[in-house]
Length: 334
Image (cartoon, rainbow, N blue to C red; front, side):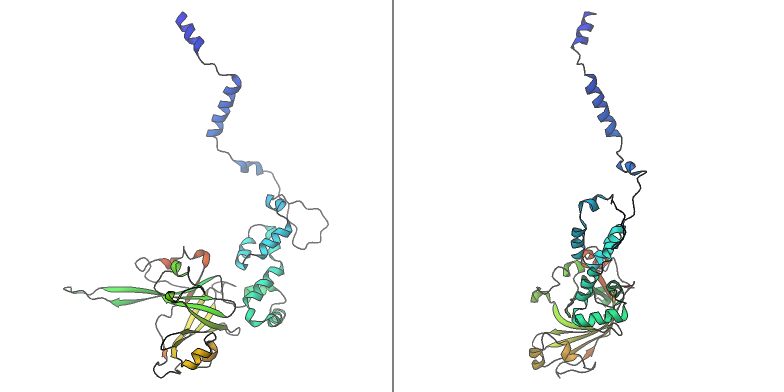
């Protein structure tokens, strides 16, 4: 009996306050926290529209709206691309009404059609789009400058195998890449490299080893056709004349281009030295079989005419166009 009492006296006694705290901590470990349950029964008041003249006081329950003044929100939206503005308009009602501010869409339109001039853009705005810059952005044809237009082409090449009855065949895949700029210039590259690799150096800082060629283009608002020309320099200068038709899978997308014609012709040395930056002005009125160098005949290409698909820069790494031919032998642009 004495030994039991002694052992009982040596046992560690836990205070009642500490014991209750340990139990509470154990319960919190096993129970999942659900903070969204506190939102039950909370009614969110509607946000006043942009430019509203209502005299009723309005309290915005959203934390970001209470912390971020409207002036700073306006500055953030003013630095966003038009397609990012469209995504921001889907966040909440207040952002939707804020994004409808015509200032954002006016800047986007004047930048997209800067070659037409400010006066011409204002005239088109009043005559065709009822003075709405946002409507003009959605309905007027334009080339997209926030990514690359890609044309994926494949063909079958017969192989040679010795001591076999049947010869193997190989699927060869190559791409045509085009990047447009609002100033009327564009970059062109014909390569078998994948999209995610080409997008890294598809700019005006590319070296000669990258084989990125510069050209000029014009867009016709009557039939949505694009006339473009690229000059291949060298001992025998060659000009590549491209005719495209712009279209979109949805309104305002402008994410497809049909390749109507692709012609290579020769140019003389005087034309190359005098108009290297504006080669389109030299060959704009040429016929399909016209060439100014008898050693280089005009050739109208019939292969590799797959339509172009637009890929934004933020999607180049995840695009299906990066798949090898063994995983995607044929691609339907749509």
